[in-house]
Length: 202
Image (cartoon, rainbow, N blue to C red; front, side, top):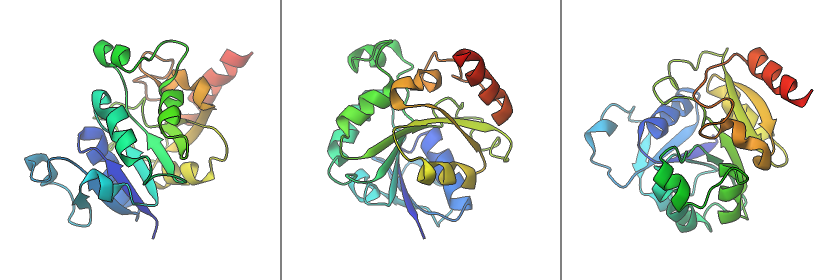
């Protein structure tokens, strides 16, 4: 069984943990608040642990508030070396965007890859509203993603949890799934997303 560690117990982290568990992955949810009432609704199959233990999974997903994103990534850097790290974090609060040093020429994916140079960093699920993440995992909606290099492991995960993977480009080209980007906070079918991507390149 492939294991996935989801770091962050907010709505995105809990939603992805639920979808991954439903798809048959071994899921650990990393949190600083293991006794929080919001975790009571999770299936008992989902283990709750600290960030370091969670980062020992085969695949790691980052789903923390952005002003903690860099610090958490640095904390787990050695534990996730050689692994796929899926970054869902969004600097949608202007102060967080500025504090991270992000700017229009620097995407979230490139920023995270600089922090985790020994991991395969990908952007995925970042453009999907957290309240739609679980109910829209029905097999027909697109999940735009970005990665440098081979995407086979990532696309299989996206398909397994009920979305259609659509590559928006490399990490440097992933601004479309960042806050304010072309696909930000939009639900599109795979065909519609591909059509928009094609229109941009022609």
